[in-house]
Length: 417
Image 1: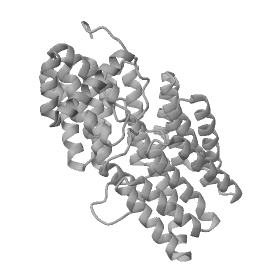
Image 2: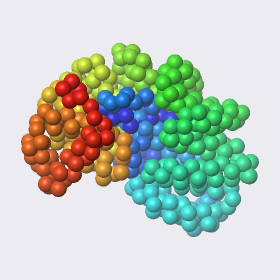
Image 3: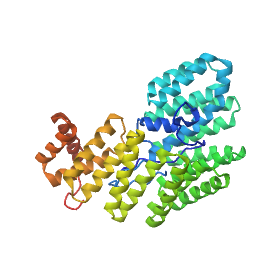
Image 4: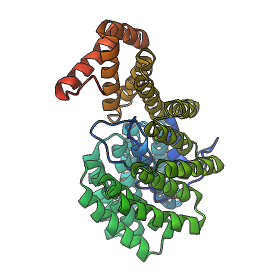
């Protein structure tokens, strides 16, 4: 299944998805409801096996948390923008509105124009938002440049909180690069500032970031300690969303430690809390996480049921990346059960969505599943099913060419896979 979720950088607090009106502090969930542009990500980042077993939204959760924190930071400046320069404020609102539609280039244009009219103190959150837009598009170099400038501007303005936020973002980008040592350096520096400011919610969430890096590095005991420390802080603060984050991260580590029953117990608690606080995106993600645990337990009937429930929820809220993820998971479960003919349409739709939104994460698992279906069905039947699912001969041919390219790059045994 797909390994595409993560809880690396939530340093702000947020409630439920608003049903109407525009609340900048709640933009993140609206953004994700509109459909994320890349495989983001984001409860803990799991070590990826050589052949990924399932698709997950871990990196999506991580990116979700990045935006949550940065939007909360931006809200601190909204009043100043309104009071000082009406045009800058209007451009800021236009940028946020573009983000809700996942129009990242358009959002950058508005923020860049606002940047020309803003005061120096207002530049930090604007730079961070521009960086977030680049990050969501997968332009990590551009994101890193903006976050770096935000950090330098914060230092010039002696804005410690802004500096810590920018440093944490830089750490997240280095995590994306796979530069885990650098990621820990920046995250620990941010953590030190948050502790100096006695900003306990941000301390907790920075600890989650650090735990995710340890998780990626295979240091599961260290990851578990960081997440449990973060969870203890969130519980002490009655920070419900922080509790959901910490529980989800802890469950993910337990899962990868092979403690599947414990992981299920924790995920059940996460589900209940996500439902309680109206975290619709988190609820959808955790349903899929439970499905992946059952997949590892070999209980494919339950795995299929949870992935189908997650898919229904994702369709309901318009969370396209989750739709693609759960279609892929359903296809992989069906393929595992030998139902290749049923698996192909799900895998084909998943790949189509992943390609349309520019999400690289998850494509490997889908194509591996497609290849095994091709082995089981034969090329002629595979072509027919893909043509029917995608609506064109050209679409079917394109998918099969991708499968063949993958085989040439990555040969694997077909008899026992």
